Image (cartoon, rainbow, N blue to C red):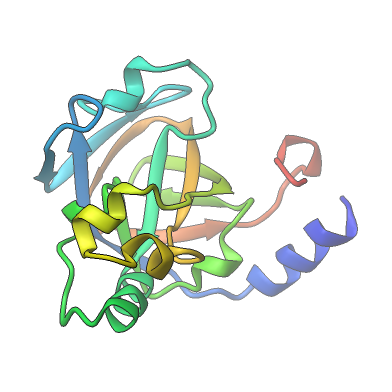
Length: 174
């Protein structure tokens, strides 16, 4: 395990579980986001009903996550009192966890295990969704991309649990 992996593992060792607050799916690119209460994840593909599942198998961007705390920060930067998560076009909204620590970690939500990896940068459409400066306001607050490592079902209200490192050879550390 490299030094960055050891540091992240040490910092995350006692991170309290969070909570899944929201689930959204898009059946097609640029399509309307449909809010649901429960979803099914398929290993190596993504979420059933989401357009990402039809893309390249094994992609690092099968599922996108953002925290409610990041959404609050985006509100402060844009002057909004609240933002509907559908506008941000992410799949999952979680709360109660420091998303900065969750990169390159494994998270269990219901039966599903996700492995987070790349930052989910905002696209220029955020200026349309949030108003002028929306993309800039989201920079650093776009959330994370993840791969489905173990499929299954999960629901809004489920705990989000960071799993400990078991085998550093399995992990996606840079």
